[in-house]
Length: 233
Image (cartoon, rainbow, N blue to C red; front, side, top):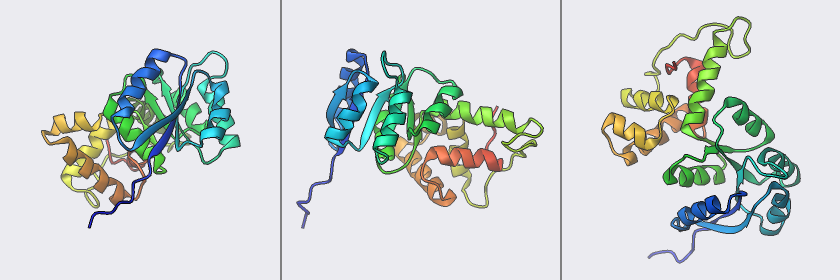
């Protein structure tokens, strides 16, 4: 017998000073039945009052706003409402912006050039307690980590990392998927590169996360680069 219990919706607050962009994001999210946009704002200064009133599961926050930017607003929300999960929306893929946002307390960082599937996936991952970085951003961070690891006396490692596929825990196909993720490819791009379906890629990613004992693909890539399991140029 089918259960009548309704699945709890993911409540979202959207804050961006560009109304046209907000409308576009809302239209995308309205197609996902498990999402509900409960409020929207046009500046970071509105974030605390909106979160206090609506208690959203996820806040989508623009990084560049006229009065209080997304980084400062994130810091305010983390201090006032530590359980609120925040995804930064940005046009900047520079690792300095990303690391600043993550250190401040954001759980996600998306570029505004993202596709709709990535946005939906990011919201679901972050709402469940994970973190999510745009694939291009992940690649930049990994590349920076790789650069630092080659420098003497570096806190990132201090010596050159020797590359070796993790065949002791992953299958050959899973190693291929992990490599492509580290290169900054989305699930669709991985599927195209390996001539498999996007659903199959998602299954592989799920298996990789479980075997590596990490919460999300970002943690998987960071762990992989630390262990020398992927090549990054």
